[in-house]
Image (cartoon, rainbow, N blue to C red; front, top):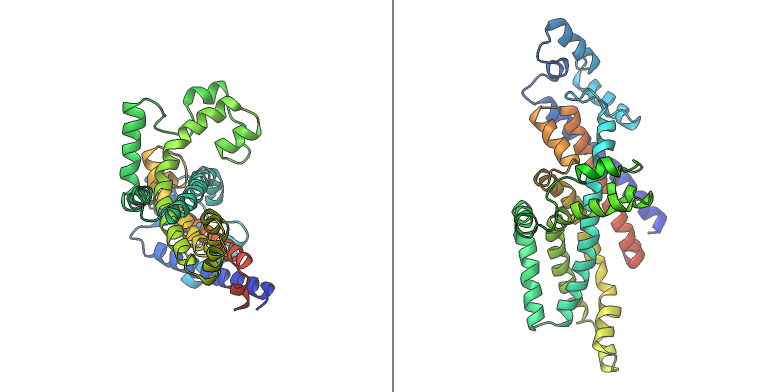
Amino acid sequence: MTVRAYLLRRVLLLVFVLLGISLITFLLARVVPADPAALYAGPQARGPAIAAARRLLHMNQPLYVQYVAYVWDLLHGDWGTSLRTHRSVLSDLVRFAPLSLQLVAGAMILATIVGIALGALTAHLKGGVVDFVLRIFAIGGVSLPSFWLAMMLQIVFFRVLHALPVAGPISVNVQFTDPITHITGMPLVDALVTGNLTAFGDSFLHFILPCLALAAYPTGVMMRMTRSAVLEALGQDYIRMADAMGVPKRVIIYRYALKNSLAPVFTVLGLMFAYSLVGAFFIELIFAWPGLGSYALQSILSLDYPAIMGVTILVASVYVIVNLIVDLVIAWLDPRIVLS
């Protein structure tokens, strides 16, 4: 199979997956024991106002017509209107998603670098004290709940050490003295691009604790996967041949074995990205981080089903797109996957 055919097949699969997810979320939203039209019209609304809201939300049409209209609107950028904010759901997502993506991207970059490096190190020092300590660290990262770890980080670094801020993406006083020019919606990126070093430093301090809490689980998974993959690669014939020829062990592990072990590691990386995007919701609530987590929680509490559906579609889209990118990277690293 050629690369073009492989890419076409994956894109078609992506489309069907997104259609299936949109159908499931649409049907689930319609069985919620509440009247979306009444929620949209407000608590003081009566019959005529609720009927007008029902027509506005297209709820007076058959279910299959509503779904076709919903998919058509999705494809044209209309993700519905929030019952709670009365704003476009897409505009709300554009407002809240960048903060979540900044948090998830930072956590995944940290997890990838640290996880692969420490995983290869444990394989290099297999059976030693360093290997034992790092394996305990990896198991702890996988086992400890992220919300518990987040609260422990708050207690240690904020209450005990008074070293790092505990809530929000940036200090209130910095927002007034050195406001960040909105470009991408990510405070770290916007402050850096505009040269606002004061805001960048303050935002980075606020970013450390939630990033560490979110990165703990994927770091542990990446460490264990890298260690297992490298140890498996060390048993291959070409590795034994290099060892017999006197190639240094460090070169064998970090240049040969690690390179050929990245395919399964990158596969896990795609899954961890999606997991972290959802797991960030808990972290955002604990650290008062105004991202998708806060928006999703408020939408769930108010039964704002268009917003809930919008968050679900966005997370699912990010998940399948990231997995497509990861599969293409793996195919680039090992062309045999494309040709098989």
